Length: 277
Image (cartoon, rainbow, N blue to C red; front, side, top):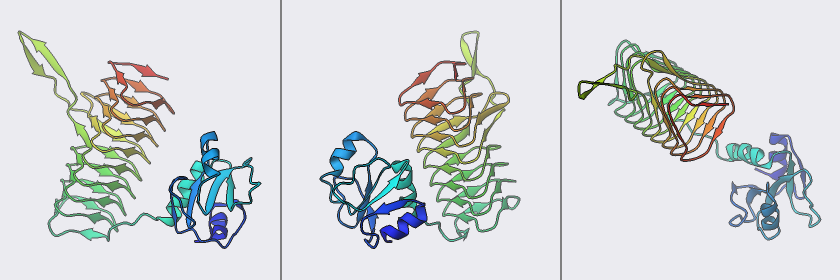
């Protein structure tokens, strides 16, 4: 890909050598003559002065007195993400069901779905078209997964969970396990049956080893566009709004509400029924 092609594809303007090849991307400190990198902080501006990157994606007001090859962008980090997708397009496995997978006869499998080795698809599950179910994933009965989703290896999705379109669920995640509900009676704990479910919206990404518990009664709900880091725990009957971002090792107790566009940092702990606006 040339700088000129990159600019045209991203809808950006360029300065410098439009025929320079971009063969990869790298950090400012490690980039070479055929790499692109980006500048989006004052510190990065200083690093860019000594970077060997052949092309830089820079802010609109970047001082290019040295005459470098650059792409100007309102949000360089966003445009870098788009460039990476152009250079490194996501590769999907071939459609089909591996011979070692176990797919219930009543499951509905959409067109162009890929189901990997030793995956399990339960009774009356519905898998949307072009979805990838990777090796060892376990999809329970009556689970619904929308189109163009990716379920990575060894994900467990319990019975009755609903997942929207274009979901990405990373390895080791568990969706729909029982919430932590017990009743103390006469010196012992008795389980409060967890008979609700989990419903997850569109364009959600869930990190490795994260867990979302089913509701005791009703629904544990995760809205559209939510992004969970690794090892995030969302307990029973929580409601997470649209486009919420939650960083690693955060634990959210039962009944919490996190409203739209909230950003939760790492290692945050929330008690029962907290509301974040």
